Amino acid sequence: RQTISLPDGSTVELAGASALSIDFTGKARRLVLHAGEAFFDVAPDPDRPFVVEAADGSVRTPGAAFDIKFAGDTVTTAVVRGAVEVALTGLAPTNVGEGQQVRYGERQIGPVREADLAQVQAWRQDRLVFQDTSLGDAIADLERYRGGHIVMTDSSLRALPVTATFDARQADAALDTIAQTLPIRVRRLTDFLVVLSPRA
Image (cartoon, rainbow, N blue to C red; front, side, top):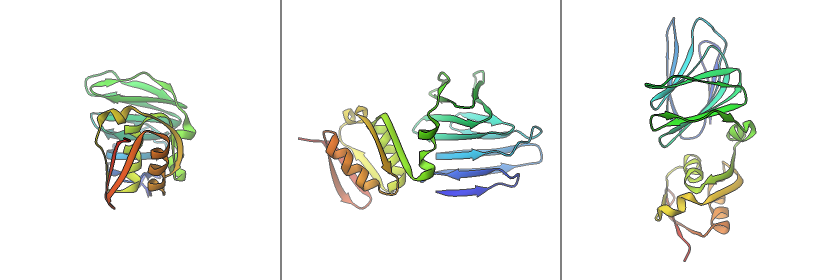
């Protein structure tokens, strides 16, 4: 993880395997989350909106604290403090308030839902919390903290549900635990390539 201090007094905390670019001008505070996850604690400035672009959408606020997770083709925004406006190209913006989250992707914005803020922010304390999360999404998170690639030989494995809390610094131990509780087999071909297959 890495914490970045911005020129306006805002801070950004980047999760593992995440990428961000910053473009601040006199009239706007613009950032692009290219991959991964980040937590933004935005210093209020009503005259200069703070805008984070991710995929085909954007999150805009004059000042708030929020998390953005960019996984696959889906972007999830959860608001910890204040409020944000989530917009997708060609669609009306959606307001998301404190304690709420929304997901967008595939040219649509989903419904605004209540967010589990403890789960959303767990990665900031090196914890990964999964609650009925698909194995595909859980593996995508673990892969970001482990490095290398984790490959599934059978697409049906992706839908298996995972409910667990793992130490993000011990991704290999998490894989072993998953293998013990789900019908999968873990093979480590190299330090950078792990293959998951159905257990025979």
